[in-house]
Image 1 (cartoon, each protein chain N blue to C red):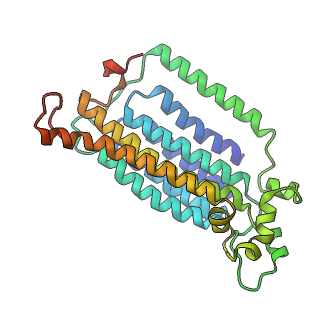
Image 2: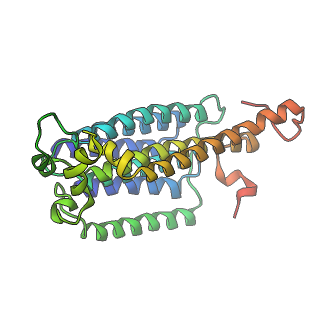
Image 3: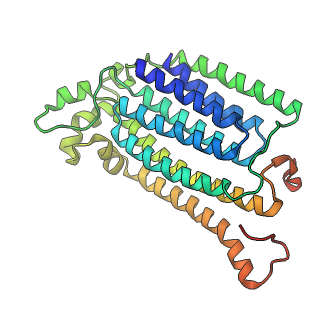
Length: 190
Length: 115
Protein backbone atom coordinates (compact mmCIF):
# COMPACT_ATOMS: atom_id res chain seq x y z
CA UNK A 1 0.00 0.00 0.00
CA UNK A 2 2.79 2.44 0.94
CA UNK A 3 4.89 1.20 -1.95
CA UNK A 4 1.93 1.69 -4.27
CA UNK A 5 1.39 5.25 -3.06
CA UNK A 6 5.10 6.00 -3.55
CA UNK A 7 5.02 4.55 -7.07
CA UNK A 8 1.93 6.58 -7.91
CA UNK A 9 3.55 9.72 -6.55
CA UNK A 10 6.62 9.14 -8.74
CA UNK A 11 4.35 8.54 -11.73
CA UNK A 12 2.60 11.82 -11.00
CA UNK A 13 5.94 13.67 -10.89
CA UNK A 14 6.98 12.05 -14.17
CA UNK A 15 3.68 12.96 -15.79
CA UNK A 16 3.95 16.60 -14.71
CA UNK A 17 7.51 16.77 -16.06
CA UNK A 18 6.38 15.17 -19.32
CA UNK A 19 3.57 17.69 -19.76
CA UNK A 20 5.47 20.79 -18.65
CA UNK A 21 8.99 20.42 -20.09
CA UNK A 22 9.76 22.35 -23.26
CA UNK A 23 12.05 19.77 -24.84
CA UNK A 24 10.05 17.10 -26.66
CA UNK A 25 12.67 14.39 -26.26
CA UNK A 26 12.72 14.88 -22.47
CA UNK A 27 8.92 14.69 -22.46
CA UNK A 28 8.99 11.39 -24.35
CA UNK A 29 11.57 9.94 -21.96
CA UNK A 30 9.53 11.09 -18.94
CA UNK A 31 6.43 9.40 -20.29
CA UNK A 32 8.52 6.27 -20.72
CA UNK A 33 9.49 6.45 -17.05
CA UNK A 34 5.81 6.78 -16.13
CA UNK A 35 5.02 3.67 -18.18
CA UNK A 36 7.74 1.58 -16.57
CA UNK A 37 6.65 2.68 -13.07
CA UNK A 38 3.11 1.68 -14.06
CA UNK A 39 4.43 -1.75 -15.00
CA UNK A 40 5.99 -2.13 -11.53
CA UNK A 41 2.73 -0.97 -9.93
CA UNK A 42 0.86 -3.69 -11.85
CA UNK A 43 3.27 -6.27 -10.41
CA UNK A 44 2.39 -5.12 -6.87
CA UNK A 45 -1.32 -5.29 -7.72
CA UNK A 46 -1.21 -9.00 -8.56
CA UNK A 47 -1.36 -8.56 -12.32
CA UNK A 48 1.82 -10.10 -13.80
CA UNK A 49 0.28 -10.55 -17.28
CA UNK A 50 -0.51 -6.87 -17.51
CA UNK A 51 2.91 -5.91 -16.18
CA UNK A 52 4.58 -7.88 -18.99
CA UNK A 53 2.26 -6.44 -21.63
CA UNK A 54 2.76 -2.92 -20.33
CA UNK A 55 6.54 -3.37 -20.47
CA UNK A 56 6.51 -4.51 -24.12
CA UNK A 57 3.98 -1.87 -25.17
CA UNK A 58 5.93 0.85 -23.37
CA UNK A 59 9.13 0.00 -25.24
CA UNK A 60 7.26 0.11 -28.57
CA UNK A 61 5.59 3.40 -27.54
CA UNK A 62 8.98 4.93 -26.82
CA UNK A 63 10.33 3.83 -30.19
CA UNK A 64 7.32 5.27 -32.03
CA UNK A 65 7.30 8.55 -30.11
CA UNK A 66 11.05 9.07 -30.50
CA UNK A 67 10.58 8.44 -34.23
CA UNK A 68 8.12 11.32 -34.23
CA UNK A 69 10.28 13.76 -32.30
CA UNK A 70 13.83 13.04 -33.34
CA UNK A 71 15.45 14.70 -36.38
CA UNK A 72 12.85 17.45 -36.39
CA UNK A 73 14.53 20.83 -36.41
CA UNK A 74 11.88 22.36 -34.16
CA UNK A 75 11.56 20.13 -31.13
CA UNK A 76 11.22 22.81 -28.49
CA UNK A 77 7.86 24.56 -28.57
CA UNK A 78 7.12 26.80 -25.65
CA UNK A 79 4.15 28.87 -24.69
CA UNK A 80 0.51 28.06 -24.06
CA UNK A 81 -2.67 28.57 -26.00
CA UNK A 82 -4.49 31.87 -25.75
CA UNK A 83 -5.53 32.99 -22.31
CA UNK A 84 -9.24 32.31 -22.81
CA UNK A 85 -8.58 28.77 -24.01
CA UNK A 86 -6.37 28.13 -21.03
CA UNK A 87 -9.02 29.36 -18.58
CA UNK A 88 -11.63 27.13 -20.21
CA UNK A 89 -9.19 24.20 -20.15
CA UNK A 90 -8.36 24.56 -16.47
CA UNK A 91 -12.05 24.93 -15.64
CA UNK A 92 -12.76 21.73 -17.55
CA UNK A 93 -10.02 19.87 -15.67
CA UNK A 94 -11.38 21.08 -12.30
CA UNK A 95 -14.90 20.04 -13.33
CA UNK A 96 -13.74 16.55 -14.32
CA UNK A 97 -11.78 16.24 -11.05
CA UNK A 98 -14.88 17.19 -9.03
CA UNK A 99 -16.98 14.69 -10.98
CA UNK A 100 -14.34 12.04 -10.31
CA UNK A 101 -14.36 12.76 -6.57
CA UNK A 102 -18.15 12.45 -6.60
CA UNK A 103 -17.85 9.16 -8.48
CA UNK A 104 -15.37 7.77 -5.97
CA UNK A 105 -18.09 7.94 -3.30
CA UNK A 106 -19.73 5.07 -5.17
CA UNK A 107 -16.55 3.03 -5.50
CA UNK A 108 -15.84 0.04 -3.29
CA UNK A 109 -13.14 0.79 -0.69
CA UNK A 110 -9.62 0.03 -1.87
CA UNK A 111 -8.64 -3.62 -1.47
CA UNK A 112 -12.22 -4.89 -1.54
CA UNK A 113 -13.37 -5.73 -5.06
CA UNK A 114 -17.00 -5.68 -6.12
CA UNK A 115 -16.97 -9.43 -6.61
CA UNK A 116 -16.27 -9.87 -2.88
CA UNK A 117 -19.36 -7.84 -2.04
CA UNK A 118 -21.73 -9.77 -4.32
CA UNK A 119 -20.09 -13.21 -4.59
CA UNK A 120 -23.18 -14.88 -6.10
CA UNK A 121 -23.84 -12.41 -8.90
CA UNK A 122 -20.36 -11.34 -9.98
CA UNK A 123 -19.11 -12.98 -13.18
CA UNK A 124 -15.54 -12.72 -11.89
CA UNK A 125 -16.33 -15.07 -9.00
CA UNK A 126 -17.71 -17.60 -11.48
CA UNK A 127 -14.63 -17.29 -13.66
CA UNK A 128 -12.37 -17.86 -10.67
CA UNK A 129 -14.30 -20.81 -9.29
CA UNK A 130 -15.03 -22.65 -12.55
CA UNK A 131 -12.33 -21.38 -14.89
CA UNK A 132 -10.05 -24.38 -14.52
CA UNK A 133 -12.79 -26.95 -14.99
CA UNK A 134 -14.50 -25.25 -17.91
CA UNK A 135 -11.50 -24.06 -19.93
CA UNK A 136 -8.52 -26.03 -18.65
CA UNK A 137 -6.47 -22.85 -18.28
CA UNK A 138 -4.59 -22.37 -15.01
CA UNK A 139 -4.24 -18.65 -15.69
CA UNK A 140 -7.74 -17.23 -15.29
CA UNK A 141 -6.86 -14.01 -17.14
CA UNK A 142 -6.07 -15.94 -20.30
CA UNK A 143 -9.17 -18.05 -19.74
CA UNK A 144 -11.26 -14.86 -19.73
CA UNK A 145 -9.51 -13.42 -22.80
CA UNK A 146 -9.50 -16.50 -24.98
CA UNK A 147 -12.53 -18.46 -23.75
CA UNK A 148 -15.16 -16.56 -21.80
CA UNK A 149 -14.80 -13.32 -23.75
CA UNK A 150 -13.22 -14.47 -26.99
CA UNK A 151 -15.48 -12.27 -29.13
CA UNK A 152 -14.17 -9.26 -27.22
CA UNK A 153 -10.65 -10.28 -28.17
CA UNK A 154 -11.72 -10.69 -31.80
CA UNK A 155 -13.07 -7.13 -31.70
CA UNK A 156 -9.81 -5.95 -30.16
CA UNK A 157 -7.84 -7.57 -32.96
CA UNK A 158 -10.10 -5.84 -35.49
CA UNK A 159 -9.58 -2.42 -33.88
CA UNK A 160 -5.83 -2.97 -33.70
CA UNK A 161 -5.74 -4.04 -37.35
CA UNK A 162 -7.70 -0.95 -38.40
CA UNK A 163 -5.44 1.38 -36.41
CA UNK A 164 -2.25 -0.12 -37.85
CA UNK A 165 -3.78 -0.06 -41.34
CA UNK A 166 -4.65 3.62 -40.87
CA UNK A 167 -1.12 4.43 -39.69
CA UNK A 168 0.39 2.56 -42.63
CA UNK A 169 -1.91 4.30 -45.11
CA UNK A 170 -0.98 7.68 -43.66
CA UNK A 171 2.72 6.94 -43.94
CA UNK A 172 2.46 5.46 -47.43
CA UNK A 173 0.98 8.43 -49.24
CA UNK A 174 4.32 10.21 -49.17
CA UNK A 175 6.13 7.26 -50.77
CA UNK A 176 3.66 6.91 -53.64
CA UNK A 177 3.69 10.59 -54.40
CA UNK A 178 7.46 10.64 -54.62
CA UNK A 179 7.45 7.68 -56.97
CA UNK A 180 5.09 9.49 -59.32
CA UNK A 181 7.43 12.47 -59.29
CA UNK A 182 4.70 14.79 -58.04
CA UNK A 183 6.53 16.63 -55.29
CA UNK A 184 5.03 20.03 -55.83
CA UNK A 185 2.85 19.85 -52.73
CA UNK A 186 5.38 18.17 -50.50
CA UNK A 187 8.46 19.51 -48.84
CA UNK A 188 11.50 17.29 -48.53
CA UNK A 189 10.79 13.98 -46.88
CA UNK A 190 12.08 13.31 -43.40
CA UNK B 1 -5.95 8.07 -1.12
CA UNK B 2 -4.73 5.73 -3.86
CA UNK B 3 -7.81 6.55 -5.93
CA UNK B 4 -7.15 10.28 -5.46
CA UNK B 5 -3.53 9.94 -6.70
CA UNK B 6 -4.79 7.98 -9.71
CA UNK B 7 -7.39 10.66 -10.44
CA UNK B 8 -4.65 13.30 -10.27
CA UNK B 9 -2.70 11.35 -12.89
CA UNK B 10 -5.75 11.40 -15.17
CA UNK B 11 -6.24 15.12 -14.47
CA UNK B 12 -2.61 15.88 -15.41
CA UNK B 13 -3.18 14.11 -18.74
CA UNK B 14 -6.41 16.01 -19.35
CA UNK B 15 -4.70 19.31 -18.51
CA UNK B 16 -2.02 18.54 -21.09
CA UNK B 17 -4.60 17.71 -23.74
CA UNK B 18 -6.62 20.92 -23.33
CA UNK B 19 -3.84 23.44 -22.61
CA UNK B 20 -0.77 22.43 -24.63
CA UNK B 21 -0.43 23.48 -28.23
CA UNK B 22 2.25 21.09 -29.42
CA UNK B 23 0.73 18.08 -31.18
CA UNK B 24 3.26 15.62 -29.77
CA UNK B 25 2.61 16.99 -26.27
CA UNK B 26 -1.09 16.30 -26.78
CA UNK B 27 -0.32 12.73 -27.86
CA UNK B 28 1.89 12.27 -24.77
CA UNK B 29 -0.87 13.66 -22.52
CA UNK B 30 -3.36 11.22 -24.04
CA UNK B 31 -0.93 8.39 -23.27
CA UNK B 32 -0.68 9.58 -19.64
CA UNK B 33 -4.48 9.69 -19.36
CA UNK B 34 -4.65 6.17 -20.71
CA UNK B 35 -2.13 4.96 -18.11
CA UNK B 36 -4.19 6.53 -15.34
CA UNK B 37 -7.43 4.96 -16.50
CA UNK B 38 -5.86 1.51 -16.91
CA UNK B 39 -4.39 1.76 -13.42
CA UNK B 40 -7.75 2.87 -12.00
CA UNK B 41 -9.51 -0.19 -13.44
CA UNK B 42 -6.89 -2.53 -11.99
CA UNK B 43 -7.11 -0.77 -8.61
CA UNK B 44 -10.87 -1.33 -8.50
CA UNK B 45 -10.35 -5.08 -8.88
CA UNK B 46 -7.60 -5.36 -6.27
CA UNK B 47 -8.18 -7.47 -3.18
CA UNK B 48 -6.09 -6.58 -0.12
CA UNK B 49 -3.39 -9.21 0.22
CA UNK B 50 -4.69 -11.01 -2.86
CA UNK B 51 -2.55 -13.08 -5.20
CA UNK B 52 -2.49 -13.16 -8.99
CA UNK B 53 -5.35 -15.12 -10.62
CA UNK B 54 -3.02 -17.93 -11.70
CA UNK B 55 -3.73 -21.36 -10.23
CA UNK B 56 -0.91 -23.35 -8.77
CA UNK B 57 -0.82 -27.16 -8.88
CA UNK B 58 -2.76 -28.69 -6.03
CA UNK B 59 -4.66 -25.55 -5.04
CA UNK B 60 -8.31 -26.05 -4.20
CA UNK B 61 -10.67 -23.94 -6.36
CA UNK B 62 -12.62 -22.58 -3.41
CA UNK B 63 -9.54 -21.33 -1.56
CA UNK B 64 -8.13 -19.96 -4.81
CA UNK B 65 -11.33 -18.07 -5.59
CA UNK B 66 -11.38 -16.57 -2.10
CA UNK B 67 -7.85 -15.15 -2.33
CA UNK B 68 -7.33 -14.05 -5.93
CA UNK B 69 -7.70 -10.56 -7.32
CA UNK B 70 -10.45 -9.85 -9.85
CA UNK B 71 -9.45 -11.33 -13.25
CA UNK B 72 -12.07 -9.53 -15.34
CA UNK B 73 -10.62 -5.97 -15.21
CA UNK B 74 -7.18 -7.46 -15.86
CA UNK B 75 -8.36 -9.18 -19.03
CA UNK B 76 -10.09 -6.06 -20.32
CA UNK B 77 -7.19 -3.75 -19.43
CA UNK B 78 -4.86 -6.08 -21.32
CA UNK B 79 -7.05 -5.48 -24.36
CA UNK B 80 -7.07 -1.74 -23.70
CA UNK B 81 -3.27 -1.49 -23.43
CA UNK B 82 -2.74 -3.17 -26.78
CA UNK B 83 -5.37 -1.01 -28.47
CA UNK B 84 -3.70 2.01 -26.91
CA UNK B 85 -0.47 1.11 -28.69
CA UNK B 86 -2.23 0.86 -32.06
CA UNK B 87 -3.99 4.18 -31.57
CA UNK B 88 -0.73 5.83 -30.48
CA UNK B 89 0.98 4.59 -33.64
CA UNK B 90 -1.81 6.11 -35.72
CA UNK B 91 -1.68 9.43 -33.85
CA UNK B 92 2.09 9.63 -34.33
CA UNK B 93 1.65 8.91 -38.05
CA UNK B 94 -0.82 11.81 -38.25
CA UNK B 95 1.67 14.02 -36.36
CA UNK B 96 4.44 13.19 -38.83
CA UNK B 97 2.16 13.95 -41.78
CA UNK B 98 1.12 17.25 -40.19
CA UNK B 99 4.76 18.17 -39.65
CA UNK B 100 5.55 17.48 -43.29
CA UNK B 101 2.54 19.47 -44.46
CA UNK B 102 2.92 22.52 -42.20
CA UNK B 103 6.54 22.35 -41.06
CA UNK B 104 5.57 22.73 -37.42
CA UNK B 105 4.04 20.86 -34.50
CA UNK B 106 2.24 23.99 -33.29
CA UNK B 107 -1.51 23.61 -33.71
CA UNK B 108 -2.15 27.36 -33.63
CA UNK B 109 -0.10 27.75 -36.79
CA UNK B 110 -1.99 25.12 -38.77
CA UNK B 111 -4.39 27.46 -40.49
CA UNK B 112 -6.61 24.90 -42.12
CA UNK B 113 -7.30 23.18 -38.82
CA UNK B 114 -8.46 26.40 -37.23
CA UNK B 115 -12.07 26.18 -36.08
